[in-house]
Amino acid sequence: MNSGVFLWTLLVIADGPKAIIGLDQNPNTDLKTPDLITKYGYPVEAHKVVTEDGYILEMHRIPFGRYEDRRSARLSKNPILLQHGLAGSSADWVLTGPGKALAYMLADEGYDVWLGNNRGNLYSRHHRELLSTNRTFWDFSFHELGIYDLPAMIDYILEVTSRYKLLYIGHSQGTTQFWVMTSTRPEYNDKVSLAVGLAPAAYTSHMRGPVTQLAKLTYFGVWVGEKFGYPEFGSRSPWGKFVGNLVCHGGAPTQFLCSNILFLIAGFSQGELDAGNLTVIIGHVPAGASWKQFVHFGQGFINPGHFRAFDYGENNDKNLKLYNSLIPPDYQLEKISTPIALYSSDNDWLATPEDVDLLRAKLRNIVVDYKVEGRVFNHYDFLWGNSAPESLYEPIIRLLRKYR
Ligand SMILES: *[C@@H]1O[C@H](CO)[C@@H](O)[C@H](O)[C@H]1NC(C)=O
Ligand SMILES: *[C@@H]1O[C@H](CO)[C@@H](O)[C@H](O)[C@H]1NC(C)=O
Image (tube, rainbow, N blue to C red; front, side):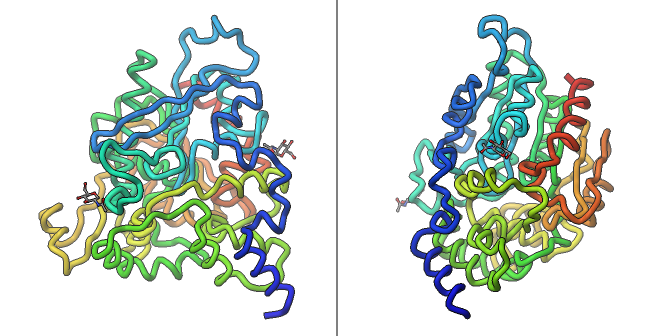
């Protein structure tokens, strides 16, 4: 290791990536989602939702656009729910600011915008009985996000807005939990008039990048989790930084990104990301999750062709007890009847074209199937890419008009 890299590593360990790129200069880095929204002149509300199994989720709502009159603005708006991906939060949809971030575009377009927060992230760390310091709190994967969190959020929105249906946009795991919900609790199909899937994730056997090295440890992760409890995947945890530094070496100009585990997992393309926005993004992600979610995705990597419930391993009678079978059951994707719009990319390391093909083959009601071609647009560019507003959000907004 040369001395520059050594010094850099020391800095990151001592002070996080903030030390290197002067993150502290952008005040947006430390603002919570509601404060960010308020700062840009939009109305915002926070709502608490309790799931059937006791988790207390905080949702953020932008009920109308920036230029609307407060009194008339509330009349007959179509609710739309935006659901973040793995280790993300409601902030993901507003980080790049007005004119660029999807949540603001939708609010200005006349939608009643709801931003979900799954259990375990920065905004949803409470439970009726469990403390988040108790390992039992962290015993969940995307399965629970699909059968509990998403239904609770949808029912809450429909009740508050007195509607029968809403529109849905999910990114990555935000689509995974939608597939879980609509296949396991099919009555929810009718509560969504259109589901837009950005970087849709279900099958994961073709994942690319350094994360595939971690995925090989999946069943070790199951063993640890079952024996000692599943640990929290903290927001900007020291462990994440350590792994980042371990895997990324060399002197590339984007080196510092390796200290943020999410970019390590998803890849990074300089062409699409604005440096000013990047500092803000790094301040907000990762926003917290359970390691069991990563382990569950890892199982999809190890078992090609399967998108199925959590596997506790053949030496553990938990599979038998839960599923009445040694092998967990596949999610019945053919039960999904909600109209689906898929937006995927050639250069996505996590929702790869091969795995999206597998998903596409199972879904029966695809109304739009759009692929971003080329070697630039990656997993996070669906949220933060410079070309996303024009190439994706505008066509999506035109599509939504037909389903409201
Ligand atoms: C994101 O980048 C754009 C373009 O440089 C800039 O105008 C905007 O203020 C940035 N947004 C935030 C929230 O920093
Ligand atoms: C964690 O929660 C479980 C289930 O409620 C309880 O049995 C256990 O005693 C708790 N552990 C701690 C350390 O509080």
